[in-house]
Length: 567
Image (tube, rainbow, N blue to C red; front, side, top):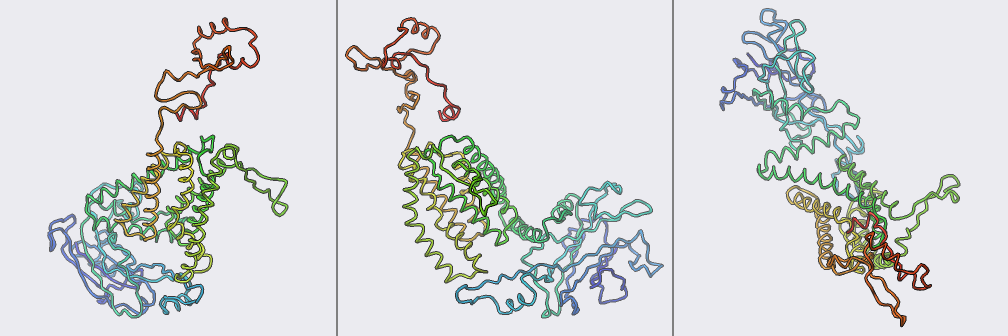
């Protein structure tokens, strides 16, 4: 067969006689040949400089038209003696790519000055914050799929069905042509403008196996349900670049480790969410837990969500942060009594939300320590916040005052956010205990932080994100230190009279008044049926007042499920 490649600015090509349109012609190719060519791999390539018309320079389109014909035939239908419909297969596509270029109008809010290029500022004023520009990549590969599968029309699975063309009369399908630009990285595209008189183009031809074609087609095809908009797909293309670079440049062992670690990270994130919900849902007492830290966590999560929405971050990250915000808001209902106050309405229409501390929090010493910790914390937190706000206002550029507030708060929380975790450390120190903490959730989050540390040094990430990872590591190690110094004391007797050291000492001790009036401790009878019957027959039916509670044998109340869980 023969290969004919034409370049044109028209989507439908008919000008076969124009020699300037013919880019490449390769004769005597063999279908399914994997041994010919310069490198004995069945591949051929051709390179040339394209003279582009003015319309392409001014954001116009340019197309590549590929024709395969059996040897001795020509793709031009007007050459009746050399053209045959069943001996010709044709495929075309646009080879330039339109990409959005966004202009971030940032400036110093005090002076109004900016470090942006004046030409870019002028284009932003002329075309708006988003401009669609034609881009060029100098490489494209034409693959012909080496496949003999007896496909039947209507039975080809997507996304392969859009590439398989059937003849309307015979029902057979033509050889499958696939334009392969999978390895063209987004960073290698450059804009086409009036300063470019010509464009370099290297066209390669290679056979392609069926399974590799399926992989390429699945990765390159966009979903027809484009309800999330084109911007999401542009983000997806940029994210795929990092995957492609990793596949091309990373050591295979390190790449396998990265894939495994990524899967483990996702599992740990899910388990952290699950155990966090489970812990707070089953929590009956707030003793030892910082309620103020829960509210501060809601504020911190809300700031992060607004920041990533303002900066157009990845959609998956937005969903993850949003779920975290919902969980933090739900925690408020577990640490405080939240109800609708219908008597005092907002603007006389909407019921007002009222928040009240739970009794288990008010009656414990935790509230005192929590207030004390946040009072000490404010002495450090507010001056640092003020200094960082002034620094951000003087030396950094922002889109506006709203963006300044968000970026200032986000940067402050990343840099000094560990300070907000100190109230819980302070409460642990005062109570000399860490038994009240959700250790499973903390462990999963800590493991994820260590995984983030690995990615922070393998993958290019912002410095502030690395600082945030280091901060979480330090705080978790402090938690571990507290867990080590505030160990479980097996000799300590709990509220049911049980200790972990001597099982025989589990029975409670009763105090019986002696003749002298002193209280002498005697072991309480066991809870077997025979012992209870003997005790009931030997004790007086009407004990004297004051000794009743001391001499009547009483069973220990059954343990609540939460205490059994603790044991």
